[in-house]
Length: 372
Image (cartoon, rainbow, N blue to C red):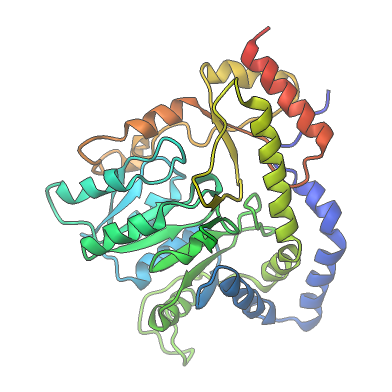
């Protein structure tokens, strides 16, 4: 029995191969492999798409977060509130600039940062947090307006980590339009994925944008031999920008196809598990289709026997990792994150899942839940 890919990048390549090859060939012809015209074109298109004044592309989603923190002047001794249920890169970026993450809990429906839990970070002894990083987990925009108000009350800032959510909206507005800075990732499995690593930072402030452009290029200023700040080798390659431009042409169609797959899954599993659901006014991009189940490993094993891969995002709260075990956690703890990490599993999700593959996945999941 053949195995259905969890994310089928080969199917996307078959569909888009000609246009991607042409885009790559254009770069090979002009030879501007670093900061070529495709990079600037991509930045302009993405900034317009997410309704931000500036887009600064970079080498990865993690670099995007680190650059954002560096541009905001986050330094050793500072504290930043982060969700305890997310990929480790969110907290990692805080540590990379020498600051300390404070872990707060997440909402049990969307798994995004809970504003009430985040508020508790200001009650901890020690320095007050200078900012908050909210993650749009699984492609569902966080409660950006509430988190912006929370940050403003404490004279802090909000960064939106939109690594998984490019294309998602809340009340008709891109989730990445929130925050003083927002970021995204172009890791190959993301809704808009490169053929390697890549990322972007979004903002509306001209000075922040200038700082971000400097930071991604070794801290260089307008004169290439002048370095007034410490920076990174954080540029997005022109070849990756060309690939992303080609994929951006079909991004809206892929978004609709993801929506259709998610809707079909939800209809099929209702009554067996609680389907993931979007908040009112939210259109998720469905980077993952994640459900909670009892006896997760048994169910995953049964599905694997049927040729259906599943993934667990994420198997434990971030602060359970050795590198973050000593970091502070809000006083009420992160019980939602802990429970979710013991129960969540994700089904295959990508825009090239045909109906027959969807049928196999749905049937395998239904049978795995019921048992032999």
